[in-house]
Amino acid sequence: MDAKPVVGVIGTGNMGGAMALRLRELGHAVWVRDLLPEQEAPALAAGAMRAASAAALAAQCELAAVAVVDAPQTREVLFGAQGVVHAARRPVAVLLCPTIAPDDVEQAAAELAAHGIGCIDAPMSGGPARARDGSMSLMVACEDAFFGRYEPLLRGIGARLFRVGRRPGDGARTKLVNNLLAAVNLAGAAEAIALARRLGLEATTTLEVIAQSSGQSWIGSDRMARALAGDFAPRAHTTLLAKDSALAIGMARAAGVEPALGVQAAALFRAACDAGHAGLDDASLLPFVEALWRGIDPPRG
Image (cartoon, rainbow, N blue to C red; front, top):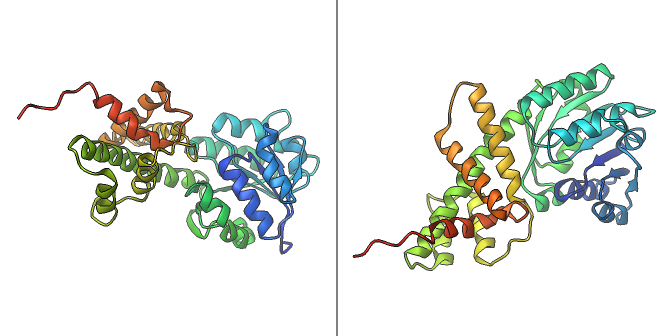
């Protein structure tokens, strides 16, 4: 393998765009493809090259990273009319980064293998800032040969690199377990801060106490700090944890269990999306919870 393999990034939104910039910073030649030209612009300004389709991108790359939102988009960019498998010269492997169901990962890996393309199941976690500086988490499941070949690249974009298995889908399983807990933690943090304000406590101070005490969670501290500052610009849309928690519940039910807290958190995120928060940052769960409680009169002393 060349010291710096050519990499393509399909889907240059918050995470994919940040990853493309990180790859350029590491010295890789990078091709990008997104349906929205404005999403490609930062990577192009950093020296990436634009491909007219996923197939055109794949023909230029040794490794094609897919960073789209969901399973239908993943199938389209891999197997659609202009998908990766129709490239004139196929890549060695696809780096599959979306959070999708394990069954969808397994099916994609099998279809890619039928076209002579490897699959690295590698969902991402940590948000755009960590994707940009290379400190995000990657949960990787793939054959030993692909891991050995691309480990330096993977460590360059994900300092928190976890080899979770060899079976395609185990990366997705690990990510969904993590994201179900993230949903529970964020739902709990929103309720806790909403309760603090209802009790007349100073919310920022309460959050500082939580951040240094047993109630601390990274996502809770991060999102509630933004919520208290009134900052709901989307880094992670509410719809993403709604999708991921629903996928996690489906995975759990397929395993024969019903995680009670997870079910409640998933329902809260779905309700927030239905109430118009889908396009906002998931920090907006705090005002959503407070809106739910607004019609509840406090008990009289």
